[in-house]
Length: 382
Image 1: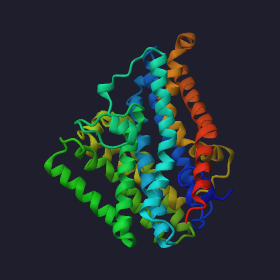
Image 2: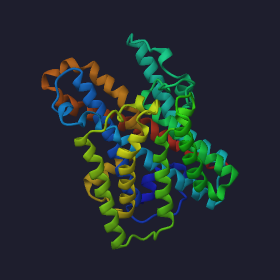
Image 3: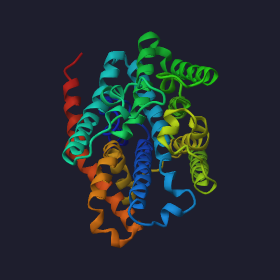
Image 4: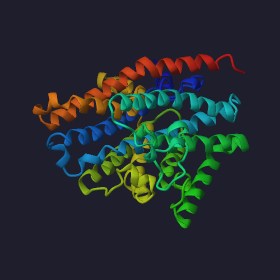
Protein backbone atom coordinates (compact mmCIF):
# COMPACT_ATOMS: atom_id res chain seq x y z
CA UNK A 1 0.00 0.00 0.00
CA UNK A 2 1.42 3.43 -0.84
CA UNK A 3 2.82 5.44 2.04
CA UNK A 4 0.15 8.14 1.84
CA UNK A 5 -2.59 5.54 2.14
CA UNK A 6 -0.86 3.90 5.09
CA UNK A 7 -0.79 7.23 6.86
CA UNK A 8 -4.30 8.36 6.05
CA UNK A 9 -5.62 5.08 7.37
CA UNK A 10 -4.83 6.50 10.77
CA UNK A 11 -4.92 10.19 10.89
CA UNK A 12 -6.70 11.63 7.90
CA UNK A 13 -8.60 8.89 6.10
CA UNK A 14 -10.79 11.43 4.40
CA UNK A 15 -7.83 13.23 2.85
CA UNK A 16 -6.76 10.34 0.58
CA UNK A 17 -6.76 12.64 -2.45
CA UNK A 18 -3.62 14.37 -1.20
CA UNK A 19 -0.74 14.18 -3.66
CA UNK A 20 1.56 11.19 -3.16
CA UNK A 21 4.69 11.77 -1.16
CA UNK A 22 8.14 10.24 -1.53
CA UNK A 23 8.21 6.54 -0.76
CA UNK A 24 8.40 5.79 2.93
CA UNK A 25 8.16 9.37 4.20
CA UNK A 26 4.79 9.01 5.87
CA UNK A 27 5.50 5.43 6.83
CA UNK A 28 8.33 6.60 9.05
CA UNK A 29 5.98 9.09 10.73
CA UNK A 30 3.61 6.18 11.36
CA UNK A 31 6.49 4.30 12.92
CA UNK A 32 7.10 7.25 15.23
CA UNK A 33 3.42 7.21 16.21
CA UNK A 34 3.84 3.57 17.24
CA UNK A 35 6.93 4.40 19.28
CA UNK A 36 5.08 7.27 20.98
CA UNK A 37 2.10 5.08 21.86
CA UNK A 38 4.30 2.28 23.20
CA UNK A 39 6.25 4.75 25.34
CA UNK A 40 2.99 5.86 26.96
CA UNK A 41 1.93 2.24 27.47
CA UNK A 42 5.33 1.44 28.99
CA UNK A 43 5.23 4.15 31.62
CA UNK A 44 1.68 3.19 32.65
CA UNK A 45 2.70 -0.47 32.82
CA UNK A 46 5.56 0.42 35.18
CA UNK A 47 3.11 2.31 37.38
CA UNK A 48 0.72 -0.64 37.42
CA UNK A 49 3.37 -3.27 38.18
CA UNK A 50 5.13 -1.22 40.86
CA UNK A 51 1.86 -1.15 42.81
CA UNK A 52 1.92 -4.92 43.25
CA UNK A 53 5.55 -6.04 43.15
CA UNK A 54 9.07 -4.58 43.19
CA UNK A 55 10.42 -3.85 39.71
CA UNK A 56 13.93 -3.11 38.55
CA UNK A 57 12.66 -0.81 35.84
CA UNK A 58 10.95 1.50 38.32
CA UNK A 59 14.32 2.04 40.02
CA UNK A 60 16.43 2.40 36.87
CA UNK A 61 17.48 6.06 36.88
CA UNK A 62 14.33 8.01 35.79
CA UNK A 63 12.76 5.36 33.59
CA UNK A 64 9.46 5.20 35.48
CA UNK A 65 7.96 8.38 34.00
CA UNK A 66 10.07 8.68 30.87
CA UNK A 67 7.43 7.10 28.61
CA UNK A 68 5.25 10.19 29.03
CA UNK A 69 7.54 11.81 26.46
CA UNK A 70 5.63 9.81 23.84
CA UNK A 71 2.85 12.36 24.16
CA UNK A 72 5.18 15.16 23.11
CA UNK A 73 6.10 13.19 19.99
CA UNK A 74 2.36 12.81 19.31
CA UNK A 75 1.79 16.57 19.58
CA UNK A 76 4.59 17.41 17.14
CA UNK A 77 3.36 14.79 14.65
CA UNK A 78 -0.18 16.10 14.96
CA UNK A 79 0.94 19.66 14.22
CA UNK A 80 2.87 18.41 11.20
CA UNK A 81 0.14 16.28 9.65
CA UNK A 82 -2.97 18.34 10.42
CA UNK A 83 -1.37 21.57 9.20
CA UNK A 84 -0.44 19.81 5.95
CA UNK A 85 -3.98 18.48 5.57
CA UNK A 86 -5.49 21.92 6.18
CA UNK A 87 -3.09 23.58 3.74
CA UNK A 88 -3.77 21.07 0.99
CA UNK A 89 -7.51 21.37 1.50
CA UNK A 90 -7.24 25.14 0.97
CA UNK A 91 -4.93 24.79 -2.04
CA UNK A 92 -7.37 22.42 -3.73
CA UNK A 93 -10.36 24.52 -2.64
CA UNK A 94 -11.93 21.29 -1.41
CA UNK A 95 -13.08 21.94 2.12
CA UNK A 96 -14.54 24.74 4.17
CA UNK A 97 -13.55 25.33 7.77
CA UNK A 98 -16.77 23.61 8.83
CA UNK A 99 -15.95 20.52 6.82
CA UNK A 100 -12.42 20.49 8.20
CA UNK A 101 -13.76 20.61 11.76
CA UNK A 102 -16.46 18.03 11.14
CA UNK A 103 -13.83 15.61 9.84
CA UNK A 104 -11.71 16.21 12.94
CA UNK A 105 -14.80 15.59 15.08
CA UNK A 106 -15.61 12.29 13.41
CA UNK A 107 -11.98 11.28 13.69
CA UNK A 108 -11.63 12.01 17.41
CA UNK A 109 -15.00 11.78 19.17
CA UNK A 110 -16.76 8.50 18.25
CA UNK A 111 -14.05 6.20 19.59
CA UNK A 112 -13.37 8.51 22.52
CA UNK A 113 -17.05 8.53 23.51
CA UNK A 114 -17.33 4.74 23.24
CA UNK A 115 -14.31 4.17 25.48
CA UNK A 116 -15.51 6.83 27.95
CA UNK A 117 -18.79 4.95 28.22
CA UNK A 118 -16.86 1.71 28.81
CA UNK A 119 -14.96 3.38 31.67
CA UNK A 120 -18.21 4.60 33.27
CA UNK A 121 -19.96 1.23 32.95
CA UNK A 122 -16.93 -0.68 34.22
CA UNK A 123 -16.65 1.60 37.24
CA UNK A 124 -20.34 1.14 38.08
CA UNK A 125 -20.32 -2.63 37.63
CA UNK A 126 -17.08 -3.01 39.55
CA UNK A 127 -18.30 -0.97 42.52
CA UNK A 128 -15.59 1.63 41.94
CA UNK A 129 -17.61 4.84 42.01
CA UNK A 130 -16.29 7.71 39.94
CA UNK A 131 -15.47 10.86 41.90
CA UNK A 132 -17.67 13.08 39.77
CA UNK A 133 -16.48 16.35 41.38
CA UNK A 134 -12.87 15.52 40.44
CA UNK A 135 -13.57 15.32 36.71
CA UNK A 136 -14.67 17.92 34.20
CA UNK A 137 -17.90 17.36 32.30
CA UNK A 138 -16.84 19.89 29.67
CA UNK A 139 -13.67 17.93 29.09
CA UNK A 140 -15.35 14.53 29.39
CA UNK A 141 -18.17 15.21 26.93
CA UNK A 142 -16.71 17.70 24.48
CA UNK A 143 -12.98 17.92 25.22
CA UNK A 144 -13.35 21.58 26.15
CA UNK A 145 -11.27 23.39 28.80
CA UNK A 146 -12.68 22.90 32.27
CA UNK A 147 -14.00 25.84 34.25
CA UNK A 148 -11.58 25.25 37.11
CA UNK A 149 -7.94 25.79 37.91
CA UNK A 150 -5.99 23.55 37.76
CA UNK A 151 -7.76 22.09 34.73
CA UNK A 152 -9.57 18.85 35.55
CA UNK A 153 -9.10 15.69 33.51
CA UNK A 154 -11.93 13.91 31.72
CA UNK A 155 -13.16 10.54 32.98
CA UNK A 156 -11.02 8.80 30.37
CA UNK A 157 -7.94 10.37 31.92
CA UNK A 158 -5.63 10.18 28.91
CA UNK A 159 -8.20 12.30 27.10
CA UNK A 160 -6.65 15.39 28.75
CA UNK A 161 -4.23 15.57 25.82
CA UNK A 162 -7.15 15.63 23.38
CA UNK A 163 -8.37 18.88 24.95
CA UNK A 164 -5.21 20.55 23.62
CA UNK A 165 -5.57 18.67 20.33
CA UNK A 166 -9.10 19.95 19.76
CA UNK A 167 -8.12 23.51 20.70
CA UNK A 168 -5.39 23.38 18.04
CA UNK A 169 -7.99 22.21 15.51
CA UNK A 170 -10.35 25.06 16.43
CA UNK A 171 -7.64 27.67 15.91
CA UNK A 172 -6.66 26.17 12.54
CA UNK A 173 -10.32 26.08 11.46
CA UNK A 174 -10.85 29.70 12.53
CA UNK A 175 -7.96 30.92 10.40
CA UNK A 176 -9.13 28.69 7.57
CA UNK A 177 -12.39 30.65 7.62
CA UNK A 178 -10.81 34.10 8.13
CA UNK A 179 -7.70 34.01 5.96
CA UNK A 180 -7.29 30.57 4.39
CA UNK A 181 -4.21 31.33 2.28
CA UNK A 182 -2.12 32.03 5.39
CA UNK A 183 -3.85 29.80 7.90
CA UNK A 184 -0.73 27.99 9.16
CA UNK A 185 1.33 31.17 9.46
CA UNK A 186 -1.50 32.91 11.32
CA UNK A 187 -2.01 29.91 13.58
CA UNK A 188 1.66 29.95 14.54
CA UNK A 189 1.63 33.71 15.21
CA UNK A 190 -1.68 33.62 17.11
CA UNK A 191 -0.85 30.70 19.41
CA UNK A 192 2.69 32.00 20.04
CA UNK A 193 1.24 35.37 21.04
CA UNK A 194 -1.37 33.77 23.30
CA UNK A 195 1.27 31.61 25.00
CA UNK A 196 3.51 34.66 25.50
CA UNK A 197 0.59 36.67 26.90
CA UNK A 198 -0.36 33.83 29.21
CA UNK A 199 3.17 33.71 30.57
CA UNK A 200 3.06 37.46 31.24
CA UNK A 201 -0.30 37.56 33.02
CA UNK A 202 0.02 34.13 34.61
CA UNK A 203 -1.83 30.93 33.86
CA UNK A 204 -3.70 30.71 37.16
CA UNK A 205 -7.12 31.11 35.57
CA UNK A 206 -9.72 28.64 34.27
CA UNK A 207 -9.74 28.25 30.49
CA UNK A 208 -6.53 30.28 30.14
CA UNK A 209 -4.57 27.33 31.47
CA UNK A 210 -5.49 25.50 28.25
CA UNK A 211 -5.70 28.44 25.82
CA UNK A 212 -2.23 29.78 26.69
CA UNK A 213 -0.42 26.69 27.88
CA UNK A 214 3.18 26.49 26.57
CA UNK A 215 2.62 22.83 25.65
CA UNK A 216 0.80 24.19 22.57
CA UNK A 217 4.18 25.17 21.14
CA UNK A 218 4.76 21.50 20.36
CA UNK A 219 1.93 21.63 17.80
CA UNK A 220 3.58 24.72 16.34
CA UNK A 221 6.87 22.86 16.03
CA UNK A 222 4.96 20.39 13.87
CA UNK A 223 3.51 23.25 11.79
CA UNK A 224 7.03 24.57 11.15
CA UNK A 225 8.18 21.09 10.13
CA UNK A 226 5.21 20.93 7.73
CA UNK A 227 6.24 24.30 6.27
CA UNK A 228 9.83 23.10 5.82
CA UNK A 229 8.58 19.93 4.18
CA UNK A 230 6.16 21.78 1.88
CA UNK A 231 8.80 24.20 0.65
CA UNK A 232 11.65 21.70 0.34
CA UNK A 233 12.58 19.39 -2.48
CA UNK A 234 10.06 16.54 -2.34
CA UNK A 235 12.61 14.04 -3.66
CA UNK A 236 15.05 13.20 -0.86
CA UNK A 237 18.69 13.64 -1.80
CA UNK A 238 21.63 11.86 -0.15
CA UNK A 239 22.50 15.14 1.58
CA UNK A 240 18.99 15.65 2.98
CA UNK A 241 18.86 12.05 4.13
CA UNK A 242 22.17 12.48 5.93
CA UNK A 243 20.97 15.68 7.62
CA UNK A 244 17.73 13.93 8.54
CA UNK A 245 19.57 10.96 10.02
CA UNK A 246 21.73 13.22 12.18
CA UNK A 247 18.72 15.22 13.35
CA UNK A 248 16.98 11.96 14.25
CA UNK A 249 20.01 10.85 16.25
CA UNK A 250 20.26 14.23 17.97
CA UNK A 251 16.56 14.28 18.89
CA UNK A 252 16.67 10.71 20.18
CA UNK A 253 19.85 11.35 22.16
CA UNK A 254 18.40 14.51 23.75
CA UNK A 255 15.27 12.63 24.80
CA UNK A 256 17.15 9.61 26.16
CA UNK A 257 19.56 11.90 28.04
CA UNK A 258 16.72 13.04 30.28
CA UNK A 259 16.25 9.42 31.33
CA UNK A 260 19.61 9.68 33.09
CA UNK A 261 19.73 13.36 34.05
CA UNK A 262 16.13 13.57 35.22
CA UNK A 263 13.20 15.71 34.16
CA UNK A 264 11.58 16.85 37.38
CA UNK A 265 7.80 16.56 37.41
CA UNK A 266 7.15 17.24 33.72
CA UNK A 267 5.88 13.68 33.22
CA UNK A 268 2.83 14.35 35.40
CA UNK A 269 -0.30 15.48 33.59
CA UNK A 270 -1.27 17.60 36.59
CA UNK A 271 1.90 19.66 36.18
CA UNK A 272 0.84 20.48 32.62
CA UNK A 273 -2.78 21.13 33.59
CA UNK A 274 -1.64 23.68 36.17
CA UNK A 275 1.05 25.10 33.89
CA UNK A 276 3.86 24.81 36.43
CA UNK A 277 6.05 22.44 34.39
CA UNK A 278 4.88 23.22 30.86
CA UNK A 279 7.84 25.38 29.81
CA UNK A 280 10.29 22.85 31.21
CA UNK A 281 8.52 20.04 29.37
CA UNK A 282 8.63 21.90 26.08
CA UNK A 283 12.36 22.43 26.51
CA UNK A 284 13.31 18.95 27.71
CA UNK A 285 10.92 16.85 25.61
CA UNK A 286 9.20 19.11 23.07
CA UNK A 287 12.31 20.42 21.30
CA UNK A 288 13.97 16.96 21.04
CA UNK A 289 10.68 15.53 19.75
CA UNK A 290 10.61 18.21 17.05
CA UNK A 291 14.19 17.35 16.04
CA UNK A 292 13.24 13.68 15.94
CA UNK A 293 10.18 14.22 13.73
CA UNK A 294 11.95 16.67 11.41
CA UNK A 295 14.88 14.28 11.09
CA UNK A 296 12.61 11.34 10.33
CA UNK A 297 10.77 13.29 7.63
CA UNK A 298 14.01 14.35 5.95
CA UNK A 299 15.66 10.95 6.38
CA UNK A 300 12.60 9.04 5.13
CA UNK A 301 13.77 5.42 5.49
CA UNK A 302 11.88 2.89 3.38
CA UNK A 303 10.32 1.02 6.36
CA UNK A 304 10.17 -2.23 4.38
CA UNK A 305 11.59 -4.73 6.88
CA UNK A 306 9.20 -6.85 8.92
CA UNK A 307 9.85 -4.99 12.21
CA UNK A 308 9.38 -1.69 10.37
CA UNK A 309 6.10 -2.85 8.82
CA UNK A 310 4.95 -3.97 12.26
CA UNK A 311 5.74 -0.49 13.59
CA UNK A 312 3.76 1.06 10.73
CA UNK A 313 0.77 -1.14 11.58
CA UNK A 314 1.01 -0.25 15.28
CA UNK A 315 1.20 3.37 14.16
CA UNK A 316 -2.10 2.82 12.35
CA UNK A 317 -3.54 1.55 15.64
CA UNK A 318 -1.79 4.14 17.84
CA UNK A 319 -4.91 6.19 18.65
CA UNK A 320 -6.73 3.08 19.87
CA UNK A 321 -3.66 1.85 21.76
CA UNK A 322 -3.32 5.21 23.46
CA UNK A 323 -6.98 5.51 24.51
CA UNK A 324 -7.19 1.86 25.60
CA UNK A 325 -4.12 2.05 27.83
CA UNK A 326 -5.86 2.76 31.12
CA UNK A 327 -8.85 0.41 30.61
CA UNK A 328 -6.48 -2.39 29.58
CA UNK A 329 -4.16 -1.62 32.47
CA UNK A 330 -7.11 -1.89 34.89
CA UNK A 331 -7.92 -5.30 33.43
CA UNK A 332 -4.36 -6.48 34.05
CA UNK A 333 -4.46 -5.13 37.61
CA UNK A 334 -7.68 -7.07 38.24
CA UNK A 335 -5.95 -10.37 37.45
CA UNK A 336 -2.58 -9.44 38.91
CA UNK A 337 -2.90 -11.80 41.86
CA UNK A 338 -2.61 -14.76 39.49
CA UNK A 339 0.74 -13.70 38.01
CA UNK A 340 2.40 -11.59 40.71
CA UNK A 341 4.73 -14.49 41.61
CA UNK A 342 6.39 -14.00 38.21
CA UNK A 343 7.83 -10.71 39.41
CA UNK A 344 7.18 -7.08 38.66
CA UNK A 345 9.29 -6.83 35.50
CA UNK A 346 7.48 -9.75 33.89
CA UNK A 347 4.27 -8.04 34.91
CA UNK A 348 5.38 -4.87 33.09
CA UNK A 349 5.97 -6.88 29.93
CA UNK A 350 2.59 -8.60 30.33
CA UNK A 351 0.85 -5.25 30.81
CA UNK A 352 2.52 -3.80 27.71
CA UNK A 353 1.44 -6.80 25.64
CA UNK A 354 -2.14 -6.73 26.93
CA UNK A 355 -2.53 -2.96 26.43
CA UNK A 356 -1.12 -3.19 22.91
CA UNK A 357 -3.29 -6.19 22.02
CA UNK A 358 -6.45 -4.56 23.39
CA UNK A 359 -5.62 -1.42 21.41
CA UNK A 360 -5.08 -3.38 18.20
CA UNK A 361 -8.37 -5.24 18.66
CA UNK A 362 -10.12 -1.92 19.31
CA UNK A 363 -8.57 -0.51 16.14
CA UNK A 364 -9.66 -3.45 14.00
CA UNK A 365 -13.13 -3.85 15.54
CA UNK A 366 -14.09 -0.21 16.18
CA UNK A 367 -11.77 2.51 14.96
CA UNK A 368 -11.19 1.30 11.40
CA UNK A 369 -14.87 0.53 10.73
CA UNK A 370 -15.80 3.94 12.13
CA UNK A 371 -13.27 5.65 9.85
CA UNK A 372 -14.59 3.77 6.83
CA UNK A 373 -18.17 4.65 7.72
CA UNK A 374 -17.47 8.36 8.01
CA UNK A 375 -15.22 8.32 4.94
CA UNK A 376 -18.09 6.87 2.89
CA UNK A 377 -20.51 9.26 4.57
CA UNK A 378 -18.49 12.26 3.38
CA UNK A 379 -18.17 11.05 -0.22
CA UNK A 380 -21.59 12.22 -1.51
CA UNK A 381 -21.29 15.60 0.24
CA UNK A 382 -20.40 18.56 -2.01
